Image (cartoon, rainbow, N blue to C red; front, side):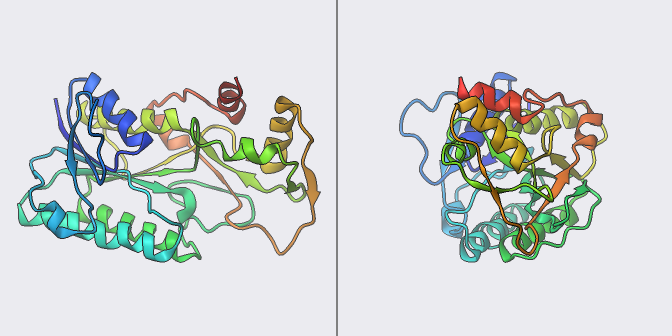
Amino acid sequence: MAKILIIGCGAIGTQLADVLVAKGHQVTGLKRNPPKTDAGNIDYFTADITSPADLKDLATDFDFLYFILSPDERNEESYRAIYESGLNNLLDKFSQAGSKPYWIFVSSTGVYGQTEGEWVDEDSITQPENATSQLIRQAEQKLMNLDAGNIVVRFSGIYGPGREYLLRAARQAPAIQQNPPYFTNRIHQMDCVGVLAFILECRLAGVALEQCYLASDDDPAPMWEVMSWLAEQLKCQPPTVKSVGNGGVMNKRCSNRRLKALGYQFHFPGFKDGYLELIK
């Protein structure tokens, strides 16, 4: 049994906590506004990581820390608060206590800056142009340099219950780039939870792990193909062709070869598998 702290208990963090508790682990969830009732077998600690005072009474005897936080808004200030100030507050807290738990840090494939539909993997260059992705990349580097046992997991676009943006968009006959293809990458929320639990179990079993894993399904696909298929399933108007501008932003194809070589099996290997479930 491991003693685990999950920093950020949104949908993924809460589902992960349930999975880990079912496996016999002791789980604490750090959350600004934890549920007042029906917390199940999860112990909650109320805190905002951007406030050092909030962390004063946080226990530090954890074996593993999951960092699964999302900024409140998509701007540099919100990202800096989480991935710089908040992360530094946590690192200071554990350093002062002389505690060295292993971190499993949830990152994003937004750290890649490729725009020509190239394949990317864990060894590809990470040079994002926007400040928010740069802050995530800096946080990755800080944790990876801190301890060789810390692990970064880069998720592509997450979808699932409550994350149905593409379904809503498909119903509006959107204008989509058709040629050259603009590739999209995704992972179902259930597989996000599955990957995070799987990596922990590998570590506990003594499996040799890399410091970084790219977590995306088997089927990076052109957005035109995805939206056309969704429109067909939803029986609504198909997308219209968008005139090509000055090139796409973050147009890439994500390889999950390292994760699958480790032995992970996807619940939803492609977008058709996952979205059919949602449409039902």
